[in-house]
Structure formats: C-alpha cells, structure tokens
View 1: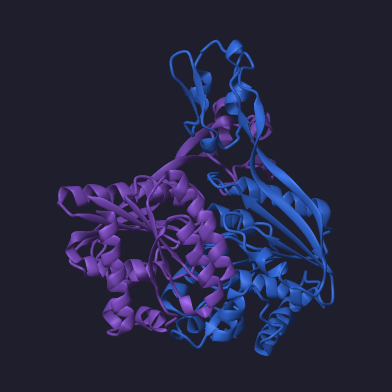
View 2: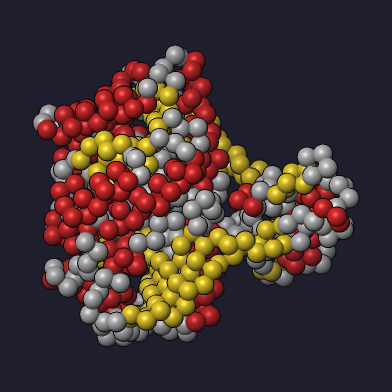
Length: 294
Length: 291
C-alpha cells in the first residue's frame, strides 16, 4: 500500500508526519519510508538520529538522465535537431551544435530523428539514491544535484526503484515535495491514499484548498491532518467538515514538538499526544478497502 | 533599480510574512513580485485589487484527432513519457504525463496529432495597500513550466519599477532548489535567505546557498525562531561567517507571526513591540547592503 504525505504550503509538517508515522509503524511491521522531496530531502535527518537501532546501508547509486551528445564528425548541419526540440535545448550556431542538458527533457526526438546519428543519447548524472535499513524500517532517499532544475525524472526513477525492490503489500510512506505543480503530481500519482497536512492559518488554509483541488483532479482518496492545532483559527476544520473531507488527526500546537523537530528527533517518543494522533491516522488507514495496516 | 530576492530552501520558515513586512516598510518605493507561484500567499496580506489579469501560455500538449488516426501506434512507441495509453481501443494523450515535446506529432504518418498551446496559469497586476503595485500569479493544477511563469512575473515587476522610477523590486521566491528557484534568482542584486535553527533548516540553507553561490549573488540571512534551538542557531551563525553571508538578524519564535496573518496583516502592522523593531532594522540593513 502506498501512502503519500503532501501539502500545498511548505513547512507544515510533512517530514515530521512521514518520519514519525513510518518509525511508529516500523515498531511492529515492515515499512518503507521514501523521501521524494528531492530538492530538499530532510527525512534522513530524523532516521539516522534514532540512536537505538543500528542502520545498514543497502544501496547508494547515482541516478542519470539521458541527454544528447553532439558528434561533430557525423554532423551534416541539416538543422533538424534544432527544429524538433521544443525546449530550445539543442541550438545550431554556424558550424556548431550546442546542447543545453539542463533544458533537455529527454524526449529523444533530436537523437532519433537525426539522419546521421550525430546526437546519441548519453547518461548524465542528475542525483543520488540512497537506501538504508534500520530494524524493520527501510529508508530510501533521492537527492537532486544542485543546478539540476528538473525534479520529475528523479522522482520517477525513485518510484521505479521502490516498485522493483518491494512487493505491493508492504506499507510505503512517501514524503512528497511541497506545492501543486509537476513534482507533486509525479510524487503522488501512484498513491493509494494521500494525507494532506496543513496548519490552521490563512496561508495553510489557502494552500490546502489548492492541494485538495489537485487531489480531486487526480481522483485520489485523501484525508487531512491539521498540525499546530490551536493556533490561528477554525477555517481549516470548518472547511473539512463542509466539504466532507476526512479529518484524520489534529496535532496540537506545542513548542516541545517544534524543539524536538529542530533537533532531528522523533516526536512520538517524547510527546505522548503525538502517539495518540498517529494511532488515529493508523486506525483510519486500516478501514480503507485496500489497506493492509491491521 | 535593485532586485531583492527572498528565498528559504525549506518551506514554513516565515519567508512570506517577512517579505510582506518589507513591502509595507518600503511602501511606494517597492514593487512586489510574488514568485512563489505554486503556493502564492502574499495576496492574503497585501490586499491586492486584481486590477489586470492575463492568461499565461507556456509549452504544448499533444492532442490526437481520432478521425484521422490509423492506430499505427508510432506515437506511443516514440513517447518516452508513457503519455499515450490505449483506452477503449483508441490512442489517447494523458495530459498529466505529456511533456509537450512534440515528437509524436512529428512521426504520425497521417498528421492526426496536433500540439495545443497550454494555459498554465494566470498572472495579475494589482494595486496593494502599501500604495504600490504587486505582480502575482496563480499556476494551474499540476502545471509544468512554473519557472517560466516566475520569469514572467519578475520581468513584469521590473518593467513597472523602471517605468515608474521605483528603486526596488522585492521578490518572494519559492521553496526548494529547482526550476522556479533558479528562475527567481536570475538577475538578483541581493538574496535574503530566511531560515530557522532546525536540522532541516540548516540542511536546506546549505543546499540553497550552494545554488546562490553558483550565481555569484551577494546574500544575507535572517534566522527566524532563533531561540528554538540555540545549538543549531550557533551552527548557522558559524556557516554564515564562513561563507561571508551577511547576518541580517535573529528573530525570536513568536506566535505574533500567526496572529498577524490570521488578522490579514503583516507583522509590522500588527505588532508594535520588539519584533517590529527587529524587522525594521533588518530592512534597513538589507538596503545598506544593496547599495
């Protein structure tokens, strides 16, 4: 079962919820936690910090995207490559073809439509995937190289790694990137259930509505967790009731949680209220038809 | 005219609340650009009137005219994004997977595939309560090309600033280090990094600064919620010193941030105390560094 944890606004507690939920569940069963926020992956900071169970590295591998490379000797300067690239990633300047790998989407059009095979596709490193195991918790993280602009291909390759290494029944928790644009779609599109986490503030509320629209567009089953409950106002809770969006849990506004988070510590181990809220989420997930959390 | 870009790497550090406060402090002399087009929130604090709006088109989406399709499958064969599944015996383009590369249309033997311009969002020019102007946008759900929309918002804000002889454009950037952030950074005179003393805050600050450094832009840093973790706060201060980043200010953890927001106000309008003073000092320090 795949559970994605997402939010419109950043900093609402995606990583806190992902790491706590995964570690809590892993006390009793096998769980995979995957950090798909490849631009700023943080979950690992909380997993390595556990201190109790020894973690073992399973894999560290480079991830590549395919980009064209110009072979001057073969080129006839026909100009087709430049013409077929919709992303201006291949430019002909006199007797030279320039390739801009950061603009390339890897569609292969220039390479395969070149009549003289002068633009073969070659791999270019875009990031790294790391897999470690701690007790019953498998943790997989991908990290985009600084300067690489496109998160989507790395997210997609991470999904592939997960599908190849774990069976369908294993519980998988995906920490997703913030926002509502392409990286979030890529991160959540295969999920069986999406947990949207927000805070009860005007920014949180506004961005939650965008995230809800996104999930409806994707035809996803989803529920909401309110973080820092008690601060701000009632708009988020009222909205969920009115729109019939399941409200899974309310994590209290508590400075202790902020401080534990700042140290990279798991919250439920020291704040019992967090454990209670996690139990509510788990109870809800167990009622889902395709759930396997019981 | 100088361009000040505020970013944070990590979300939720208080970037937008602080940027909106600077917009109020700068008043008529500051044009505001909300470049966090994915989750734009500045309008909740600055009361824009949405005076002008325009659709934003960027990129293309393939569309198969079924009447002309001979079901040869060439389009699906060349598509690297698995965007052309067969549904009910018809080749159909999945709009969320299509990258708009146009390869399918080029290989279709019957010209059954056309590329449609893609509406990815809307952008606005608004009068705001500071007596100035804000350029802002809303990206469509799941849209690609947010970097291009960011570039559009920024270039409009700069044009307005130049036409109206304003001294500053202040840009609220998006979280992360990917395409919208790269787009916000290009052409900046000074970058303000807003961070918090948590292990994630520091981790993300280091990554986003690596990007700023690549662009060779002068940067300063505000440590928000500085008192939640004195140890990490010290580590951040050490990092700033080592990298020659201007340490603009430390702000305390203060629920006035949320209270002001809940009131639809910026902190400098809501709070009269110490916090307001610290933010005013920060703004002054930024202006000294931008000169």
